[in-house]
Image 1 (cartoon, one colour):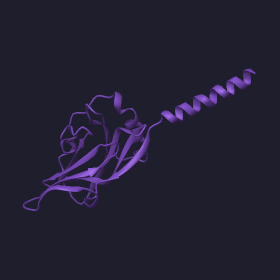
Image 2 (cartoon, helix red, strand yellow; image 1 turned 90 degrees about the vertical axis):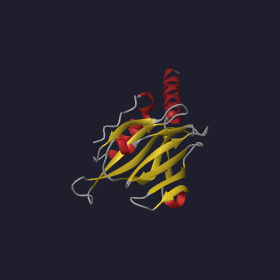
Image 3 (tube, rainbow, N blue to C red; image 1 turned 45 degrees about the vertical axis):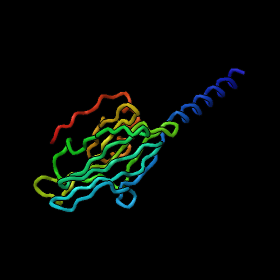
Image 4 (cartoon, helix red, strand yellow; image 1 turned 90 degrees about the horizontal axis):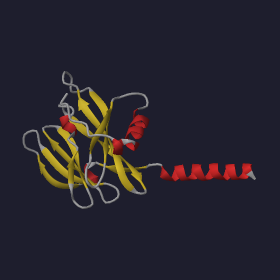
Length: 173
């Protein structure tokens, strides 16, 4: 009987921890997937577009002076600036796919690829993963994952712990 209860307890524990795990959902930042809000091809150009998110959230993609960043728009239409371009000053672009970490269908974190051109050779990029906590009352970057063999897995681990972290301040490197 003890063995039966122990096995039942372990099965219940494993099942409940699997339910509590965050899941990934993906959305696109490709121009065709986003609604253009404004666009200007003069000079270095500028663009602002609204891309679909998950759980009622949206992503506002901003481009100016050949640099990109994103803002988060909550279901209540509150805007949070993630200010990616404040972290690295070089020419930059957001990856075409954003990974949302959700719990029960509600976004809790976001992972976005951020490609930054090398200052001496703009044909060479460094591809960072920007990890941000997402919420109704605040959203901000909590971690930057530099290129490495397990970059995506590391970003997911950091994203799943992002809710309890402080916001990173942009360094402007």
